[in-house]
Length: 380
Image 1 (cartoon, rainbow, N blue to C red):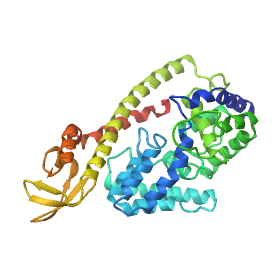
Image 2 (image 1 turned 90 degrees about the vertical axis):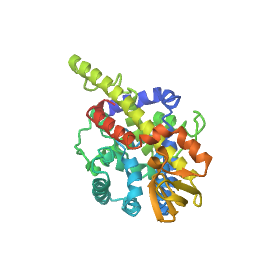
Image 3 (image 1 turned 180 degrees about the vertical axis):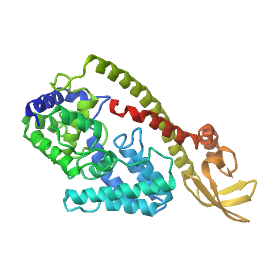
Image 4 (image 1 turned 30 degrees about the horizontal axis):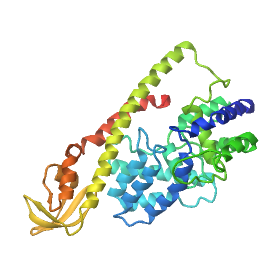
């Protein structure tokens, strides 16, 4: 590791620290997520099967874009939890099981998580590219739950940083990276971070009121693993490599890079718009499900009048004279197959009718946009 180059990077981070934590960047949010996430995940894992997907979704929302971006492995876990809550719960409990601090054991646990997740995706969402778990998503699930004992891997950012500081160890690629090699790199980097007094003083300003921040409390980050990832991430995201001496692109490479980066920006904007609509649909269905209470009267042309037994964001279960029936919530409301004796439900359904009518197309659009963006991942 080139310590001279590393010192230049640290100085860039220190010099732009106020910018990184001011609006709209507010990169301190990573510390807030790490503070909030473990409690939300614990609540999800302790919830019964009916509440498990909802609680897992709350944990997912807390992470902002740290795990889900143009792919959505965490959203995939939420949807899989609706199909097979027992399997998803067991997967996560095993992922968070005690590895005794042994990296090889942790690698085996992660590999098992990949395999079981892949089996569930193939079973329930075989065409879904965006629900696939990868080294980043699984490392993030571990990191956000216990940042003091895990490092987060983000391929493009970590590889760029390693190249900058001339660390050329091969930690592999794909789903199962060589975690022992990557952790060795992080351990060496962490030692340099903790030894830099100026950097440590700058980091401490997060906690001693020298900088102002909005929202919840920060994770104390005793081991400085969050700081380590923040430095790696900000170097790529905010151009902290500018002025640091390492391999430069020639003119032709720069031109192609700028063109690809612009394409990536446009595709990412389209993807973000699709995800925003998908999130709006999810939240709308949850809101409607909360309005539909057990015991509420419901009417359909086919079954006549009945009484609601339960409702979630996918189905309404009701009992009619001819028996108990399960009817899809978005289809039932958008086409007025389901009519409730509640003006609140009918008014809400009417106001989001176009959204409900596209409940199948909206997730497909996210899938399409994520596929289009995939070849330009490195330019984001």
